[in-house]
Length: 325
Image (cartoon, rainbow, N blue to C red):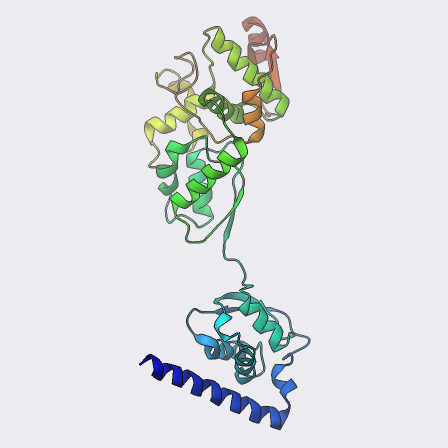
C-alpha cells in the first residue's frame, strides 16, 4: 500500500510538472512565478494542517495571493520544498513572487497567535485570575486563583507571551520560573514584606522607609496595623482561592474586629503569607530596609504622598490634617 501511494505521489508530481511545462511554454514561466498584483496589500491567509502542497497552492490561488496553483506547486516540487511547507496564519502579499511566498511558508514565518499579557506589580491571585480571564486564557473565573493561590508572592510581574492553549499550570510554572530567575533567593519574611510594600508605597524611597518601619515595629512587638493585610484576609476567609474576590471591597471597619492570620491589628508580626506578587523594586526594598526615626505613616487622600511620624501623637495630628479624622 505504501509503495502504491509513493507511485501515486510520483505520478501526481509528474502530472503537475508536465502541466506546468505546458503552461510555461504557452504563456511564459515568468507569468506563473511572478507577483500577481504589484500594487496589492498584504492579507492574512490561513494554511490548515494536513492539506499538502497542492492544497496549499489552491488555497493561495483562492485567496488571490498567486496567479495559478500549478505554478506554486511546480516551484515547490522543483526546489524540493513541498515537504517543508508549514501550517499557520501568514501575512502574504500578491505583490510578492511565488519564490518569496513559498519561502515564507517553508520557513514557518506565520503570524503568532500567542496571547500577550502584562502583569503589573502588586497584583494578587484573584486579580491575576481576572487578568488572564480577560485575555481569553481562562474559560471561567476562579480557574487561576484555585491553582495559583499557594504560589502567591512568587508569580513574577512581567509581560508574557502565552500560547492560546496554555493551561493554568503552564502559566503558573512560567511565572514562578521567572520569579526564580529575576528575584533570586529571598527569605520568607522578606517576600511577605515586599508584597505589603506593593500595597503601601509607590517609590523606591518610600518602600525602603516603610520596610524599615515594619522591621522596627516588629522589633518592638508593635502590631503593624496594615489595612491591606486585613483586606486580603477577608477575601481568603469569605471566598478562598476557589472564587473571585476584590480586596478593595473589603469592609475594613468590621473586619478589624475579626481575629485571623492576616489581621495585623489583632496580631503582632507579619501576616501568614504574601498578600500580592511584588516586583523588583519592592523585593529590593524589603531586603534593604532603610532605618529612620519614624514608627508611623499614612497616605494622603489622593495617594500621592506618604506622611511619616515619629510618635503616635504626631501621627494623630497628621491624620487629622491630611485625612480629616
